[in-house]
Amino acid sequence: MNYYEKIETRDKIICMLCQHFCQLKEGQVGVCGVNKNENGALKTLVYGHPSALNVDPVEKKPIYHLLPGSFALSFGTVGCNFKCPFCQNWEISQEHTVNKDVEFSPQKMVNLAIENSAKSIAYTYNEPTIFYPYAKDVGLLAKEKGLKNIFVTNGFESLEVVKDMASWVDAANVDLKSWDDAYYKKVLKGGLEAVKNTLKGMVKEGIWVEVTTLLIEGENDGNQDLKEMAAFIANELGVHVPWHLSAFHPDYKMQEHNFTKLATLQKASDIAKNAGLQYVYMGNVPVHGDTYCPDCNTLLIDRTGYAIAQNSLIDGHCPNCDRKIEGVWK
Image (tube, helix red, strand yellow):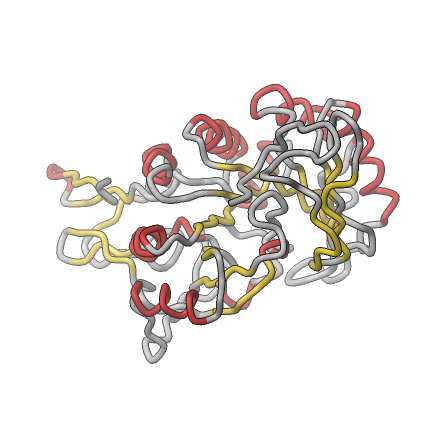
């Protein structure tokens, strides 16, 4: 795809990576702080310059239905197209200074994944849409080597990017941060409808999708909103789409806010299951993240934290009733 379009009459370009669609004059940088109009073309300033790089359990993304128990080489850069006041990686997401002393070509990144026995590469920590040209170049090489690609995102991609992702992205964890469009626009500097369209687009394109909602008491944990969110996932995405309900801890600009209580997550989990969702997980709390067969309730994957104590799947099927369990298992 083309990552930008020219506006000849106005001597500008439009960045096509996310739904801000920033119109950039020569030398101007977009909302994300890292995509620039340089000589009439879009230049991704963080290309080849990760700011965070780790080997993590894939469950930490969180992705529970892709190669459970395996490891993902995870990296991110500086910059973001959102301004979430509760961001847990704000030191890099709200930073725009690129450390050019750190340089990893796409080939070097893939080699590093293989050297560390990772089965996938995760584009995460900050918003990967803003370094999509870099991510895609890494991802295409990773795909050639048999590695999976995981996009951990706020879901504000342009529809052009979503369609392009289908050629190389295997799975995505998408944040559904709120059910209030005004909150998305005023506080997060994004948009709910854009995120909903991204989620539907990813499912349509055949990308394995898991949804995460960071529950913040008093902000996005109202019963009606949770019911509508659950209904959207069940009816628009599918009852098989996993929903991760994560507990908030005070960070960045919300350090005076209360921790999310386990009871709040349990309430949301009950609402999700009542809506028909088959795979509901609670995160950032000391509970098991087990996967059960939706048909016969057999324990399939026993998770303690990020560790897999048991995986009873047989070629992606329940060993008891032979139901096919949705996910990416090989």
